[in-house]
Structure formats: structure tokens, C-alpha cells
Image 1 (spheres, helix red, strand yellow):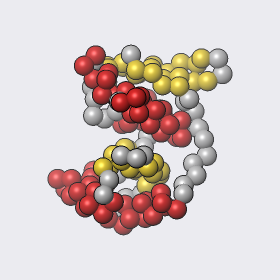
Image 2 (cartoon, one colour):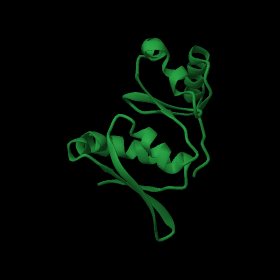
Image 3 (cartoon, rainbow, N blue to C red):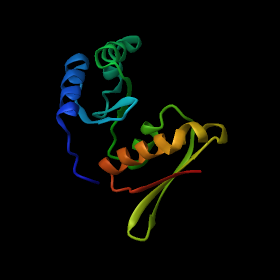
Image 4 (cartoon, rainbow, N blue to C red):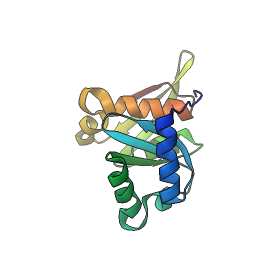
Length: 141
């Protein structure tokens, strides 16, 4: 797990997100095409809002796509939350040398979408996982 450092932009995004959703944000990651917010356990529903109204409002404010992930102390549950849009068949966390590595098994039709163009989605998921849990490697099976 790394120390999370947030820049001014991330802090402004978090402040606006918390004001609109009345939730606690644990982390915010900005990529060229979206903002990813990690909300405290049990707050995903409030963050999204009735019929997605909070997400729509924030999308208009930020002019970016949003992804909201519910935090969990359990790395396996957290991984399932990261990949909430996909059917996960199984998750295995193993030691590889001195590092922890997670292997996520998914339907073969979902592999390409999970990995993303040029591995973008997989890299983002790995970064999120490493920021919150002591897992440095991630692969899709």
C-alpha cells in the first residue's frame, strides 16, 4: 500500500463530489478520460444517487466520465468492487517473491474490456489496488 498524495485538482474534485453526494471520499484518481472516486464502505448508493442523479450532476460539472468504487478493507471484496461491471468467476491472491499478486478470473468475452485499450483499464485497476492494499501485481485470467 502506498501513501496517497492528492494534488490540488483531486482535492477540488473530492470537495465537489462530497458536497453533491454527502459521502466520504477516500481517494480520487484522474485519468485523461475519467475520474475515479473511491467512497467509504456502505456509501456507494448515496454517491450514485437516486436513478444516478448525483453522477449525472457531477458529470456535467466536471465534463468527465465518472467511476465510483466502494472501498473495502478486504482486498478480494475491493477487487470485486473495482470490477463491478463484470462477472468475476474468481479471485486469487498469491505471493510472488516478496510481492502480493492478484489474479482475477473473468468470462473470456469480458477480458478485452477489462484490460482496455493498450492495457489502460488494467493499469488503472492495478494502481487503485496498490494504493489501498499491499498488492502490486494484477493479472486477468
